[in-house]
Image (cartoon, rainbow, N blue to C red; front, side, top):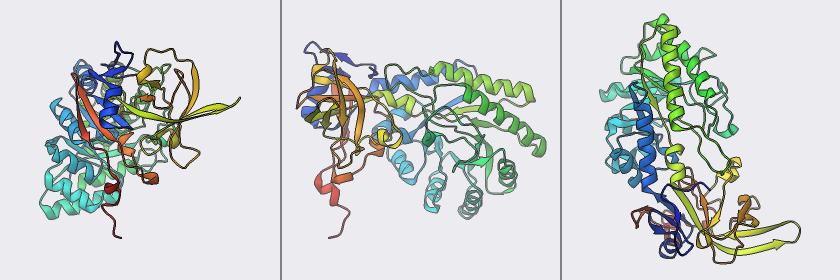
Length: 432
């Protein structure tokens, strides 16, 4: 079972996280409930800083806010000294509201709107990752009108398809993201960026996908990037100051998963860049990476209350909970898999094979196809671990279900960092 670092079974047989009894948390804050362990978040941030610092290279860790962004999380990331990757005006606004230094923000997105770029330029976002020729022209025009000269990187697609779900592959040639290296778009974009008077090109960025276990995909992508940097330097004289290798390191969702370590990831990325520098006679760039899931994913669990149990003789037993695709869309989007346990029976033997179903009016609203848990009863608190990434940020109001509350736990204390929506919240933007 993949649980936050502080998780343990208390003497009463209940699951405890951050010194807090999960069953008591659900009684206090209701269900569904996202429970984030502050100690795990901070530990993962420090693991990344330590692993990349140990390589001896100049590096920077930038948290991918899309995995989970909230005011409280932005403040933790800031306190741990990481940068923050944002990809919309809303994420920029949230970061600024949290007091995050704009100079440490990196702005991504394949279709940034003019008002979002204006916000980024006006607030002094530190880096803008340009994704298209249209954006190059628009950003140059807007920067000139505002008297700004933003530092930019170009997002490149190296043509790599890592072993992960097709929906989270982003570095292949056929992608909505970035400039293709293979078709010459990246070369043309580099020349244009260098010629535009209101932009300062500082380097390149590539992100090949998410939930990646096999590090050889990064080796190959960086090999291609370094060869491109060499050819670009030869053609234009441009020396790359920064190279962003993206994120995407996988995490454990099931007990049998074997993701690579943060240390191995650091050694692979930095080692591959060094190999390219030596091979092509390049200057060593500053290396950036953008972990999201591997910082926040295993830091949280979602707690549900069991509402009904339906046994279909000889087929399966459905255990229905009071959430589902409105708080965890990943199983429905790309067949994501999870384990489960009962927080109120955490030390009971797990012998019942069940299907954990959501409450929504969709046959596909299945959280876990086959979960092995203690014998379930109505009212049990069922917990799905490893829901810290892409759970709450994808939450929705399908069937007019209010979004859950989020609590942050530490040293026996719990505080709400996102309150539970009310029925009134569901209609607050509507006109009758």
